[in-house]
Amino acid sequence: MKTKRIAIAGFQHETNCFGVTKAGLPEFEMADSWPGMLRGEKVLLETEGMNLPVAGFAAAAQAAGVEVVPILWCSAEPSAHVTDHAFETICGMLFNGIRDAGHIDGVYLDLHGAMVTESLADGEGELLRRIRELVGPGTPVVASLDLHANISAQMVEYTDYLSVFRTYPHLDMAETGARCVPVLQQLLAGETLYKVFQPVPYLIPLHAQHTGSAPFDEIYQLPVRLERQETLADIALGFTAADFPDTGPACLAYSATAQKAAAAAEEIVNLFISREADLDCSMLSLEEAVSTCRERRERPVVLADVQDNAGAGGTSDTTGLLAALIEGGVKSVVMGLFHDPDSAMQAHEAGEGALIELAIGAKSNLAGHVPVKAEFEVLALGDGTCRYTGEMYRGGVATLGKTAALRLVGHEADIDLVVTSIRNQCLDRAHFTHIGLNPANYSVVCVKSTTHFRADFEQIAGGIFAVSSPGAFLCDLEIVPYACITRRLPKARETYFDVR
Image (tube, rainbow, N blue to C red):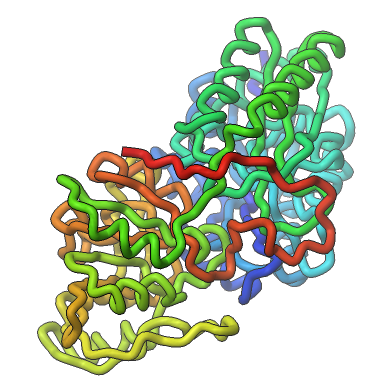
């Protein structure tokens, strides 16, 4: 039997329509928390062994005797809209690569599912429409999506199968890519999969989407059980900062009969509806966060600055939580990552051990935000090359640019900070340890992250709390200035769930 040839590519962006800066071509070309733009064989060589969908697909496909034809892979740190120039340029590279690849039997795409461009509300839907037009109706097209995908009917229409992450933090990215391989083989063998797409009627803020907590610890057992009944099911929880009509949770079901697929989708949506009241959408106020820091614990309390998450399009330079901790005189605090190239550069110019006056943060021109002006000691300096050690990104390398560890001087509060030159979500303890700060040695750890940090910080935490400090990624959906949303806000419980 002739070896099947599968073109593989990736084009990733999670768009915060209320963000500050857009994603142009340079943002897709540069390395940040993931590699820079990769083309040809570099797609395989520079992602091998990483917890990335494209790496998982490639490894599983090669193990199954499938020839993978790598075209292109790129991502940009979440931000405001993808520029039209970047979208069209990358699409052109991708399509030309497929055309130049010769005969192919199928296509696999590593996508996010929440891309909004300057001109397109549904970036992936349009990308997939063009892919389908390019390869024709008879060539199987499969793709993997992020758990935060906002799945549209168009995305479903132009693909034969969509596989979605099942964990948040995303520990199963490579596994999700690999799940596409046996399905693709079924399609190549001529089998028919009937598909059903069904939205969930309410939105879910990201800080309430932790799959290790109720109700998602139960909901995500359904795809596993349904698979034993020969039905493939996947669930996306949506990205609430992408303001377009399909924003929100949805489920997909694939089976040998339309009836089985429809029954599976209905079961999933009904479970969402029955468990809606178990959602925990609460956050601590800044005053409550400071008070929590004063409680005696054997292990650090972890405060998540959820609305300033670079991984959701936040600027990663707001100072509300930092200012509150200083005013509250909180001791033994480590905090990061602050995206502040100016302060990082000044620290490098001053050198380790120097005392310097800095204006930390608030460089992104967000209304109402001001820098924290104080004297700091430069504890350590680095070039920002940070090898991840936590489960989620282990094997990868973050590119942070010039980085500095700083200690607040002249205040009752005892606070150490990490400032970087390239925006990254603080989701791995290596973001601190690579520059000499061990989070386990502090009483309070503050991370600019929404949920991904749990994968590496839970094991040292005496308590984990989401904090409502102002930022560009609003988690209080009541105040998001939506224009295009069609689904209602959730009816969630009020009490806070504390992970210990």
